[in-house]
Image (cartoon, rainbow, N blue to C red; front, side):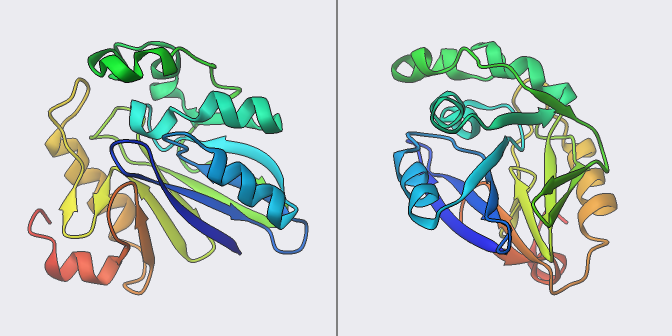
Amino acid sequence: MIFKQFILGPMGANCYLIGCEETRAAAVIDPGGEPSEVLAEIKRLGLTLRCVINTHGHVDHIAGNRAVKEATGAEILIHAADAPMLTNSRLNLSSFLEDEAGLLAGPPADRELLDDEVIEVGHLSIQVRHTPGHTPGGICLLAGDALFSGDTLFAESIGRTDFPGGSAETLIRSIQQKLLVLPDETPVYPGHGPMTTIGDEKALNPFL
């Protein structure tokens, strides 16, 4: 699997470029800031970007959607429950960041995702795991043996639940039912901060 990580935007959100080695088809997960670096890497590697996948609809994970879509024609994918956030600055919290407010009106989703759906990117299959709690439509993505956890699960922490639509009880249940059932050696690439593994989070995460 092609894999590149970027840290974008003022909140330091992790953005991931993943793809199929054989077909050179690719996806970008959470372009949350100026994506010029990501677009340059796509060109350098000779990739065809099929889609942008947002793990949820907060500003720091969707701010680069328009620029990536306009540059590549890629479809924007997000869970159905968070789709309204893409075009609403109040829902995606960009209206609270005065210098970012202009970034966040649209574009809307081209495809709304559901739990257990599989996104095909060349020969790479990406499974959607709906993990509400941080937002109602938060998702994690299982690609090969790697988990991209958005703001659901971090190294020794979990996502905030004090934003509109958040629920600590729901988030913990999502993690227990959808993530901790994966093998301990599963690498976890979160929306912020360093990578971890499922086994380390079972052993070390104080919230779990």
